[in-house]
Every structure is written in structure tokens, then in C-alpha cells.
Amino acid sequence: MNKYLQCTCVLLWALFFAFTCASAVAQATPIEKRGWKLTWHDEFDRKGVNHPDPSKWELEIGGDGWGNNELEYYTQRIENSREQKGHLAITAAKEDYAGEDGVKRSYTSARLKTKTHLSQTYGRFEARIKLPGGKGIWPAFWLLGDEIGKTGWPSSGEIDIMESIGDATTVYGTLHGPDYSGASGLHGKYVLSGKKKFRDKFHLFAVEWDPEMIRFFVDDVMYASKTPQDVPQNSKWVFDHPFFIILNLAVGGNWPGSPDKSTVFPQTMLIDYVRVYERAQVSNGRAAELEHFPAEEF
Ligand SMILES: [Ca+2]
Image (cartoon, rainbow, N blue to C red; front, side):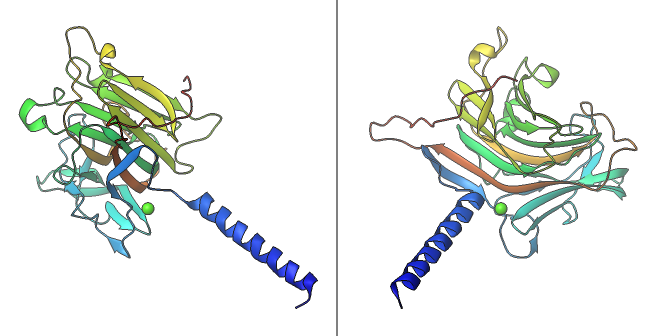
């Protein structure tokens, strides 16, 4: 091999290697995060089409409106929740369906919780999701206090990491507790610029939950933070005990209103992964701080 050819080969290999690395970086969604230790996750990457992993998720069944006058009946059927090609798909369908209570309803969907499989106090909870949208469509990724069976809601606390209604141009992060629940919840919102919608592509939704501070993120941009100082006078901060995760796709209800002729069915909420972390301990015993992009005003 002459020297010119040798150089060309080396150059080509270098280019190929650089391209391969660049592609890997562009596609990678690293699990490891500096300052955090992974405690639980689901990548939804089992082979074939599966019911959601029963070792990680419980499927809730029912159609009593879930306290919000929602219209759907949540089923365990694979038509409403399935793991497929690296994603969890939660699908809301328009169909006549009679549930276990014998009542005929017009919509089905799914609601999954980690309750007995994961509950944790503090940490980073994140999910990469492509949202559905349309009038009456209400996807949510949220946390509910383990104490709900004992103290009841909202004393048990609720952390809504992501909720969206309607056209999915805006997502909301909200805390609910005693004297600050429902429409009075402590909330922040993140609005996409231009005519972009959260249904156009995947986005990363997260909270970082520490003692006396909960911060809300979209694509690693912090858009809201709440502390005990935000709680109404004579009420209390109820976020110092374990919470579990819920993913659901509601149809209708007090907040979004009912679907109308413009609403397209079926609608699917597509989840690439759900990951949970706790703050890593550094050598002096203090929890590590994570660097962030600066907060933006919305
Ligand atoms: Ca995945």
C-alpha cells in the first residue's frame, strides 16, 4: 500500500469513526446522570408486543369519573395499553364499552401505577413522552402520596409532573395538598414557542423533588419551583413521605371538557421511558447538586 492510499484509508476510517460516534451521541438517551443514582426505570424495550410489565406496573380498572367526571373506562386490555418497539402506548379509543359495573360508556383508555412496585421519597422522576392532543384529551404523568389510603386526598399530596389538555401547546406542573387542591393547586406552566405542539415529537418531563423544594422541568429547562413558602397560611407542605407514579390518558372531565366533533380517535400517549433517581451522595456525605440550564420565565 503506497503512502497516499494508506493516508486515505486512515482518513476514511477516522471519518467513519467520527460519524458513528456523532450518531451515537445524537440518538443516545443516557441513563446515567451526573449527581444522581438510578433507583428504578422502565425502558419499555421487551421484544414483541406485550402488556405493560406486571413486575413494574399495576393497571387500574374503572370508570367512575375518577373524581373529575372523566368519561373513559380504564381497561386492562392490550388495545388500551401495550409495550411495543421500545415504547409504552396508552391509547384512548371511542367505542361502546360496558365495564365490570355493567354501565355502557363511549370511551376506553388506560391508567397505570407503580404503587406496590415503586414508591420513593424525594429524587428525580422523569419520562420521555410524545403527547396526544385534541379537545377533551387529558394525558398525565404524576405522583400520588402512598398515604392516600390512610389520610385521604389531598392530605396525602399529589405532584403532577406533566398534564396537558386540548391542543398540547402547553403543559402544567402542579402540587396538590390540603387547602391547595384542584384549581387552587400550586402550579406552573410551560408553553412551546411558535405553533409547536407537544404532540409533534418526544419531550422530557421531570421533577426534582428535595426536602422543601420541588422543581419542574421540560427538556431540562426549569419552568417552575415550589417551596413550603408557597403553601397557603395555616396549611402544610405534604411532600416528605413516599409517592408512587401514575401514567394515564383521560377523556373528558371537569378541566378539559368533553371531546367534540374536532377530536380525532384513537389518541395515543407514547412513552419512551420512565426513570427515577435519588441524589448521589458525595464523599463529605452531602447530596450532590446537579447543574441546570437557567430558569426561564413563562
Ligand atoms: Ca424506550
